[in-house]
Amino acid sequence: MSGSDSAGEKLIVRRPLARNAVYSLLGQGLPLFAALIAFPLLIKALGTDRFGILSLAWVLIGYFSLFDLGLGRALTKLVAEKLGAGAEREIPDLVWSALALMFVLGVVGAILVALVSPWLVGSVLKIPHELQAETLHSFFIIAVSTPIVITTTGLRGILEARQMFGLVNAIRIPMGLFTFLGPLLVLPVTSSLAAITGVLLVGRVIAWMVHFYYCLKIMPSLRHGAVKIAAMGPLTRFGAWMSVTNTVGPLMVYLDRFAIGALISAAAVAYYTTPYEVVTKLSIVAGALSSVLFPAFASSMVEDRERAAWIYKKGVIYLLALLFPPILLVVAFARPWLEIWLGPEFAQNGFQVMQWLAAGVLCNSLAQIPFALIQGAGRPDLTAKLHLVELPFYFGLLWWMLSGHGIVGAAMAWSARTAADALVLFYLARTFVPGASLAREARVAAAAFVLLLAAALINGLGMKVWFVIATLAVYAPLAWMLVFVSRERAFSLNARNNTANG
Image 1: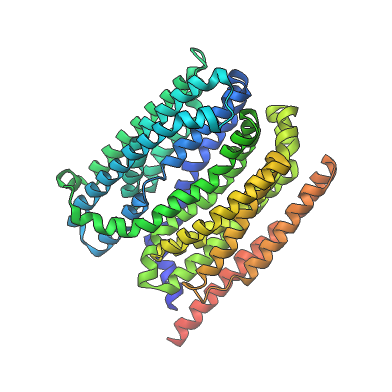
Image 2: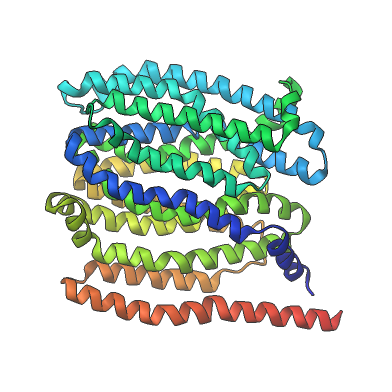
């Protein structure tokens, strides 16, 4: 059997990537259903302006979970490497040193948030005057949560390095549900944004405590670790460039909503964020897969690059096959679905936003596979430099499109950036797996985007229904035959031939 084939089979048996990917998918996907339930209730109870501000609070909490200078992912990589090398005695000092650094960064982040909040609320964002006081209080509460959120990413990284994805997502699922359902618990008492963000803070503290408990339970040696300056060197060296990606990358993801709040209104943020929060949840498939593939790439790029190429191609193939049907449904039926879910006002203002964002999600999701490969190969500097180059161009494009085309222009700019990002990442990935040709996948992706464009342009609900049915009727057997069966058949034949020749 060939090296890549045997390694691929070994990977499936010894490292249950598929099972871990399913765990991650559930952990990131189930909160979507909570959002579907919570959003109409929150909009009705809070009003459009308050809900828009709440969505900004969610953005800030999510953004600062990544503002850890790359130490969370660096910790995952280094702990996984030491486990593989049998150097477990070095892990406790490494972990405590990382957590200490992350806590300091969290405190610095909290101070920065507290300092800029009055400026954001009073001058940058178009917050109605009567809501400015409670918005400011909410942002202060978010500042307090920053050290907790950041150190939680480190604790989660320890569990991921131990391949404890089932446990990680057993914690993530209730926390994801609480993010959207927690505010509903406050509504019978008050509609204050400060009270709502306070409840979210309590949830984050509980999540930290649960992560910490299981880290100690699974790795009792952590009880005897100490903070050591020498242990911080490898963390900061790997995390330095990762920190640029973790800061600039999410900034480009979240910048659109703050630009909308600054240029238009808090209500416009709500019209944009609501379809955004739903449609971008489709990227959880890619997020679940890439989070599992990252440690696999980190080890296979050192041990066996043919195995890395095998994993890389499979990841792209399966992701494209899984995502196209739901993206097609979103593009085709964005308007009627929004009208049923949130009413004609939200449908009128948000359906084109949802269509453009859906196309961008497909690009962004596919890009996560080469992104994980490049970082797993130990080159986070490449993705960081790419994001640094992208940021000013995206900022200019976003401002221009938002000024001329409103929130639809913001969605178009976001999708254009994700497409450019994906093309560059796939080009860079060729350096690490030169034998992994994706010519067939590129043709399939191009055809998929043509079909998405057609689904958006077709008028009439009946015509859209027939188009989607016909497309999926042709797509299903082709996806199975061309993407799955042919490649698995080639895989098996190659394995038999190499065994016979050996």
